[in-house]
Image (cartoon, rainbow, N blue to C red; front, side):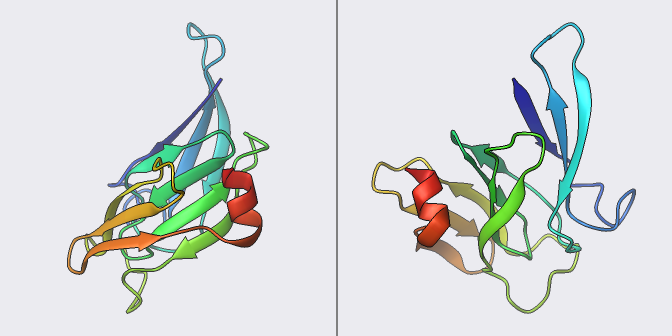
Length: 130
């Protein structure tokens, strides 16, 4: 019913911070724009993936960002792992993609400069991921 989309070329151009747009696509002939969610950082958003209740975003210099999407129209960030801690600038370095679908719960993060990271959610985030 909902579609989340990132535009990796809008940060630093048409928006000043990481911005994900939300659409309701229940009626495919009449999709509606719901709004946006942001990390509040300058980093460029990139590949995002969803599970039942979580959204996983690779946001270049601000790393992996995990959102609770239980309320599909009002996601909020619940976890992150920064693979490029030097800064959160809108540049093409750091976390390029991630893979959150392993049965073990391990999340693979690919970083342009630093290689692969293997991480797991903990606390509230891990409970939502089950």
